[in-house]
Amino acid sequence: MSKNKSWGGRFAAGPAEAVAEYTQSVSFDRALALHDIAGSRAHARMLGAQGILSLAEAELLVKGLDRVQEEIEQGRFIWKQELEDVHMNIESRLTELTGNVGKKLHTGRSRNDQVGLSFRLFVSERMQEWRNLARALARVFVVRASEHAGDILPGYTHMQPAQPVSLGQHLLAYAWMLRRDAMRMEDCQRRVRVSPLGAGALAGTVYPLDPHAVARELGFAELFGNSMDAVSDRDFVLEALFCASCGMMHLSRFCEEIIIWANPAFGFVRLPDGYATGSSMMPQKKNPDVAELMRGKVGRVYGSLLNMLTVMKGLPLTYNRDLQEDKEAFLDADATYAASLGIMADMLRELRFDAPRMRAACAGGFLNATELADYLVGKGIAFREAHYLTGEAVALAEQRGLGLEDLPLEELRNICGAIDADVFAALDYEAAVRRRESAGGTGPSSLRAQIACLREWLKSDIDVQ
Image (tube, rainbow, N blue to C red; front, side):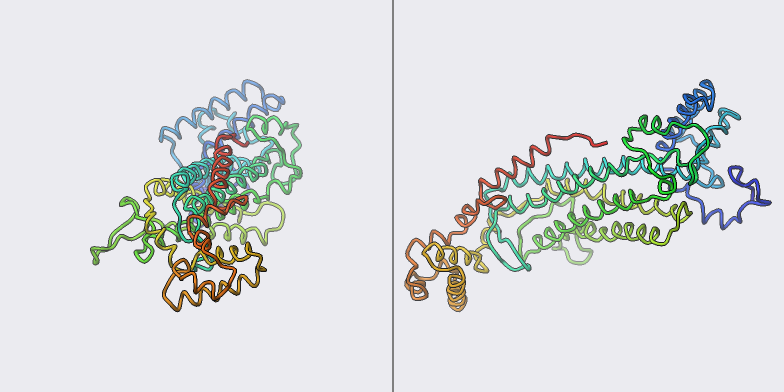
């Protein structure tokens, strides 16, 4: 039970072995090592520029940190659990390399603002990767939508056949979701990239620091406004986890459709072999396991968000050790979300759509009923009456086992004398899709406009810092 030299001066003994294991974080927060070094490098340079350390001391610290980074990147760094976390491991090795000068690096800094800074750098970097992956997946959706703009399938509400739509329109819906995901991440970055360095433990510092210099070097446009808030703020983690949760929810919705469409009862898609599995007992099976697992993993990301909301709800100002729980929650969500975005893009590229099967499915469920109602409106009949008359036609067709388009003209005219032979052109499924040219609709011109808009967005690939 050796004492921790960073804080153990007033203790007669170190923590019990079980406590040391229970409270350590180096097993997971070492993921922040390079970000901690970047923050320490900027802090050291600032201490030298401000005359708090000599320029020679600051340069020695920077070179020592470079050496530590090299050891970590080459896998030669020895992590020590007894040093608790990534920050003390790095500082300990730096002191071994630079002697007593290494002990000066922490001047004007607390682990509270140090942790906040390195974690903000890490979260910002990972969110940038999420954004890039979301945009890459959106691009695949746009490509596949362009390929299938002329194919139609049933559109559903309440999982019941509703109206015919273009498969391109259906796929573009997910591209728009991903666009919102990427934009949400870009907006979140403005609140992630706020430097807390200079807040100290909670009350600021007596040293003449220049926190703006540190923020500028690290690419942060904003500095904390209140030292107590700075060291206890984890809103940036909560927002990032919400972004991941919302993004996973969007992926899960498409997974659900893949699972349904791959069922032979629908037969709308053929799963690529690399993204399906078989049964150990039933040789005919081709299971959509990748989509099912991705759908299931949403719960992990939601759980990380709920975990952090629960951690934060009862914390008094300022720093509390509970905040150590933020790293594992974020790391798990990050690994899940990033992998899911990449795998979905790969799977979507190889997914094969059965356009004839989709088109044939339009004949079931009276998807052209709205077309008949709109046709009657065009004949001067009020919509509510047209709706009722169309319902009568559907009931008749259902009783006869026919589609609306298969009913004889005479029988349609018995329902409404305004109906003429031109009704059959209105009941054509492809024509129904082509007529929906309202903004954002499923018609060809609308699809071309959507694709052009999304492609323009994808071209404007400007990193948001």
